[in-house]
Image 1 (cartoon, one colour):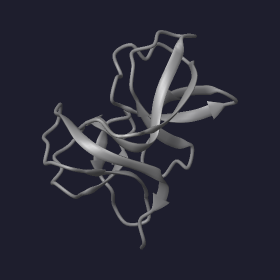
Image 2: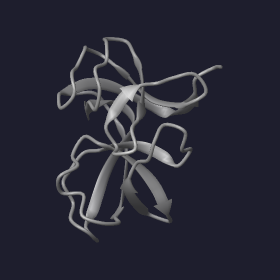
Image 3: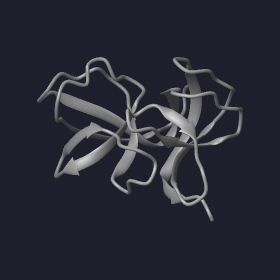
Length: 122
């Protein structure tokens, strides 16, 4: 995928070296950590690198990238974060962060389009 993405750089709060392509959330000024479940408005985008605690984290918040899947998803599903930062199909009333471009099973890394947090209509 080679598109112009909107990214931000922040400091990793905690060791995120095993969490490349997981959803992350904005914790404080210029600090990110692993995302929480779908309803969190602070969930901001998808981690692009593997930073240790205190290192710079690169996060795509708009554009195309990849995401780690935590449960089975279908192509074109709207995605939200699980409590562990992986992607799952968004449910009514939860905040969507991305759209799956292909289907995926738990543990897969699939292409997606990331967008600013939007609540799925009830």
